[in-house]
Image (cartoon, rainbow, N blue to C red; front, side, top):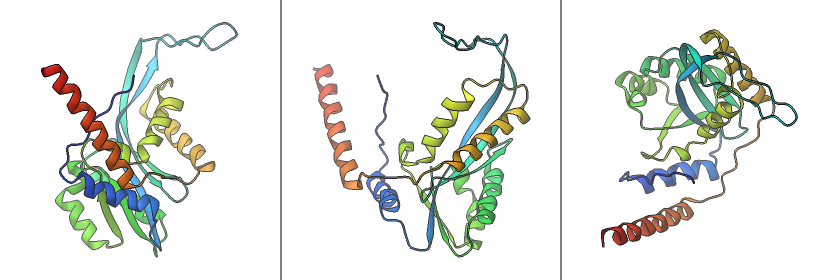
Length: 224
């Protein structure tokens, strides 16, 4: 069983068309970066350690653990080649978001326009963030609709790092956790591939309309 949520954003179609267009028709002399933050990643130390995988026995993982703090992973995925700029920070306010913007500014070619895809989180629209954007005109923001995080392809990277490195990891400190995250980012970048987007905005809208229609029919059946 898979859960899902349909966006009720009044600008859903407009935002979808904008972002799908960036994926399917990249702009000349520009980079498209999918940006987000994975907040409150916990440094958990399993106590006692689980049993390792061996023949005729599954790997085990205890539910008992000790917390050693948290970090927030800021990430920007380049649609062109799939590489990720990653940065761990202790908080996730507008100040950290600005710090990450400056990191992106340093690590991307200066002659390229930057189109950043991000969610509508309040820190992304904070006045100081807007002031910084006004002084850095090569940055262009494209926001995803509410309840439509699947439009931001960096979410897939967050899923992969959680599954492959974080969920079964054991970390005795935040520093150890952050080192593991940076190691994973480097490993990912060494074998990254371009992001391929095949569905047009029209195709997605038609699918959403069909889903809404089926849900409405089910709700009417329940009510009557």
